[in-house]
Amino acid sequence: MTANTPELSNRLRALVNRDRLVKTVVDLVAVPSWTGDARGALDCLANILTNDGFRVERPAGGHPTAPAVVVRLDSGKPGKTLQFNGHLDTVHLPFVPPGVSGDHITGSGSCDMKGGTAAAVEALRVLRDSGALTNGAVLFTGHDLHEAPWGHGEQLEGLIREGCVGDAVLIPEYLNGCIPIVGRGLATWKIWIRRPGAPIHEVMRPLDEPSVIDAASELIARFRQYATHLKEKVDPLAGTETVFIGQVHSGEIFNQYPQECRLEGTRRWLPGEKRANVEEEFRKLVAGVAQRTGTTIDIEFEIVRDGFHLDREHPFVKTFQEAFSTVSSGQTISCGAKPFCDDCNTFWALANVPGITHGPNAGGAHTLSEWVSIDDLVRVAHLYALTAVSFCAA
Image (cartoon, rainbow, N blue to C red):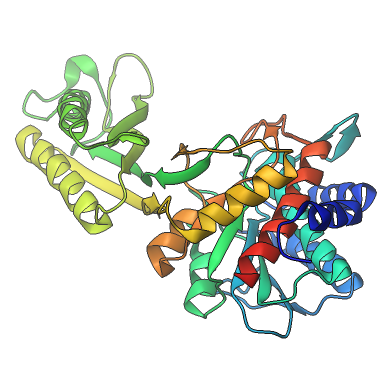
């Protein structure tokens, strides 16, 4: 039986166990796993896979507090390695326990992205049980330290540097309307503008001391000019580079002369731009404002991910499109842009590994109302298994 035939697809689909998949999601969601503290969920995943009969590795990836979970399913014959990669950490919001209602599983991380990770686990089971992986291998990785600003992908970077990486990667994040072939890099920044002197009533303020609010106003104006300049850097799919201000805070009461003004925001750039140049340009702009206003300005500039690019002509893209069409009864999927940063950015920037983000229908990411579709989890598990058979045999 050749790869990616309707007969093979039907055989793989028949082996996707919906109840087992739902239980995997619920078990993972039931364990709180805020970024930096995802050991419990990773231990849970390791136990699930061990009980399923897989040999589980627990490399630290530079983060011994929550060792990663790694499983290798090897056909024993030459071929490519396809990686399934998912993060089990969640943003720092109050924990919401799992629930199942109709087609939806709810709870913390159900959308982002314990649901998708569980679908990849189910694909791994299907491949093992079917014996359809006749060439190459599948590498499964689960990890912590994904969600910024609490993590910046450090554990995944550690795994990649240690050689825990495939020839291509599938990321089951909650995006499935297109095959993302371009995405912007991201940095978060915080700025503190300060003046000398003690807190003081506005009418008693020394006239020679600078105003932190005036300095913030100038900086905001400079960022507006900078944003206009960045719009000249444009990609037809990903859009323009940006600088964004999301928060401005200053003062304790209405008539106290403030000592400090704090701003926070983001800087996004197109693939190919060097992160060092992005940061240097940003810091130079801010330093100029500090010099002109007589204030002290401190900057915390945190790189979250570099930009992302995928060659739409890469054989992996064609393999995925063919598998998608087979699983989806002839539907097609086109190429587009990725609005957010995910682990595909890291794989491309660090290892030049082609990655496709494709996960289940889901919503409520980074809120208290996360959900994921069970029907679509089944579809993703089926699709991942079929893609693996085709890619590894090519």
